Length: 361
Image (cartoon, rainbow, N blue to C red; front, side, top):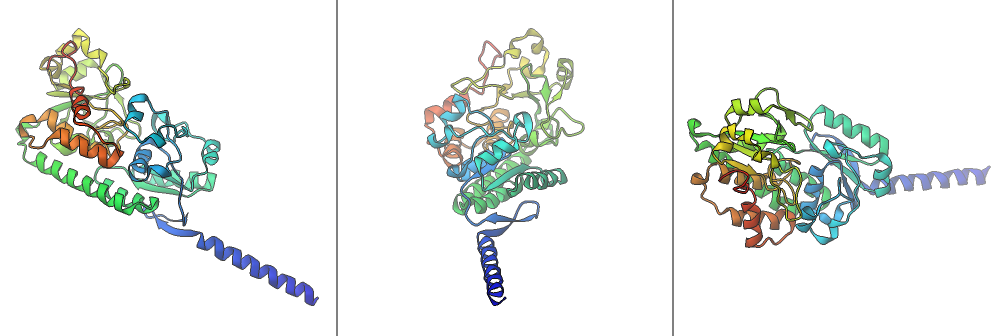
């Protein structure tokens, strides 16, 4: 009886010690929606549920990326660090690459999952559900332009990269403030009306108020597509007749695919009927730079902070006081860890103007 009592006491001590060890291996972490979750004390691998989250992780701590959500093309990989170019494709849960599955996720063995989007009930429910399914903590953060700086600081603590996070958050705050000041100086009657052209035929768009068009809302331009804000993946279909009726002063074109050199020319602009659109007739069509990631949207990632300056540069060139080549080089160094040459920067910017054969400039 005495031996049995001693054994039980020993087992109780062992179990208590194991519990204390497990507790010491985790730390509480409060995410962007106020959820307090237990995370591993040491985080080495992070999985992103979307390309937006993946880009945040890459800019902060590329060595901790578990993988990408889709296969990188040559134009994308060129501007990224060699050690991340061939990371596995793990899929995702959002957008057109929303083909993630639990088996692939578990095989990657991430310490934590990062989900960035809207800080709303849907995001919380998704995070709680995924966390329960895979047994891996899910951190939620906001992906809006206004919240990007705070999101960088939050993820910087998650990644163990607070200094890099401080640098990038500071850039975001400064860029957003400068864009708002720029916009405030434009008289209402001089604000351009802009159509955001998406899809292989240019007849998809996102409305004012959508996360996909936040850049337009900030820089002092009027999105011609009004009505209920497109949510989620977005892309509302419109007719060419509607675009003509909107009479946009300028068109910003989303690159739907990138050539190896990072360029893309919208073939639909060559169609005669597009000449009926005011912006096309006046040669005010601009292809959004897309390498390694879109500067305006698709995905709505941190590259939009460089996109703020690019949109100002193409829409209001007479008001621009900054050197966009220098700004582009700085952004690629800070966010992509890439030493962009002056020639490369000019090539990226030159490609944003369609060739004369497509639309006169």
